[in-house]
Amino acid sequence: MAYTLNDPYTLTLVITGAMFLAGLTVYGVFYHLLQRIFASGLKSKSRLKEEIVMCGHEYEYDEISAPISRIFIDIMKRSLPKLHYEVEERIGTRILNDWFTWMLVLLVIIILLIVFIG
Amino acid sequence: MDIYAIIDFLVQLFIYPGLLFIIIMIIITQWLYRKIGGRIQYRRGPTHVGPMGLLQPFADFMKLLIKEDVVSKYSMKSLPVIIASLGVGSLIALTLMTPLAYNPYSSPYDIIVFFYLALWSSLAIMLLALATPNPYTSLGAGRYMALLVSAEPAFIASFLVPVIAASRIGSVNANYSLYLTSIKSWIPWTYSPLSFISMLIAAIAGFIAMMGVLEIKPFDFPEAEGEIYWGVFTEYGGPRLALGFMILFIERILIPIIYVLLFLGGPWPIDITKDVAGGIIVILLKYFILFIFLSIIDNVMPRYRPDQAVRFLWKYGVSLATLALIIAIFLVY
Image 1: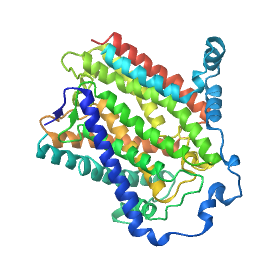
Image 2 (image 1 turned 135 degrees about the horizontal axis):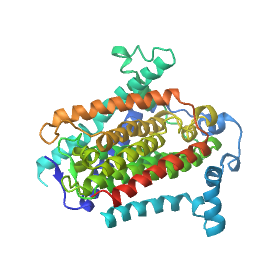
Image 3 (image 1 turned 90 degrees about the horizontal axis):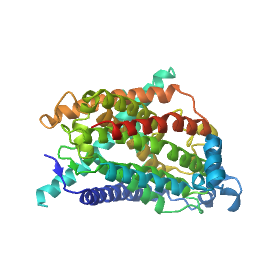
Image 4 (image 1 turned 30 degrees about the vertical axis):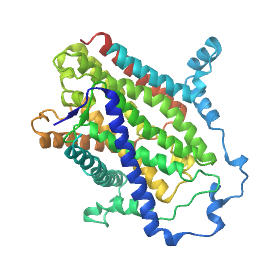
């Protein structure tokens, strides 16, 4: 027997509720509980655990952050040079460089496809 | 909702096809993956823990979970763990919408819920990467962003094709539902020449996109252990790494299962509405064949450079998926 709900909104709520329930159970059991039972005796007071970034090398905070957006832009520029030139130079938008806009546009396209064409 | 429906919901969420079933599947698939990797590299793979080394992945997973939780002082402390747990939860909740569930949940247009849940897990990995400052992690995050904007459009466009085709064919009338499409996904293959062509093109594009989403070689450049030391996971160890791996491993179970459901006929030749157990066995058999194929590819392929991979995914994945989508929308009815 399938639980066929009338609208996707109710299903989204039910499934999101299931997601939170399962996620919090995973957090509670696999992370919190197991850590409390098994790893409570392992807590090291050594400062080493705070300086483990860069495999123990000395560092400054500014040095350890690489500009993620620039890495993304560089990959896109090298991968799709013509499209990048057309969109950025001709049309004058920097949408290709904005990861969040990409994902938002993608979501809007899916919704439009399903709702209007359907 | 009566009490039995709530109990049924909890049993499905936590036992079958939810959490417990997924953990068992992780153990089996990771054992299989390691055995295949071992055979390809002239090794034996896991042999000691459990019968034929079957419990080795479980032992490794438990080892990570009970290790000390080490966090560097510049990292976010609790948020990445909670988001990673929700990423696991999103994939577990997804199982309730598939025919693997004995009482699945469905509604018209629920395919969008599938994409939303699948994207949650990808974004959870992204947040894990953004939560720690490290040059290699940043490189991994930048690469992962590039992979997502290339693989996700192809993934979504191609996986929409069988749903749209099945919904536009009057005899199926799947109503853009993942479950209804899954139980009759073989019909668009045989309905008309145009529906067959759109399904074939979408199946090829979907396979490429699936490899990208699952970071299967040659698309594993966000991790690239030889170049950027696991990229996204460079800083992680212990339980945080276990949760990150759990998302990846569950994705490698569920996304191919959805591929089987939408492109490989799902439970066909068995009618799952009449024989639930038989249908589930057929789905799992098809899944294991697909998983073995993906594992072989992952073990024998070299890795693309990021720009090569992105170009390949746009050139073949996105363009083929868009073509299939156009055929399905305008020519299949």
